[in-house]
Image (cartoon, one colour):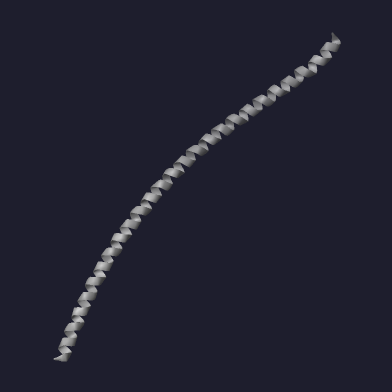
Length: 95
């Protein structure tokens, strides 16, 4: 019986060590899964921010285009006014 005990006790101890290791690995797994979930949530938030920023950029580009078009129209109008003034000055000089 003692010979049997000598063989069984190391096996029992080894099983306890394996169980401890299993628990430790499970704790690490749970921690990693929580961390993973947090990271996924952060990624979703960052993706929402990116979409929002892209929309803002598009809106800004459109607004800049409209302003630029208005500026071009204003420049054309002023150039036409200057040309008329120059024509009037030339007409006065020729008379």
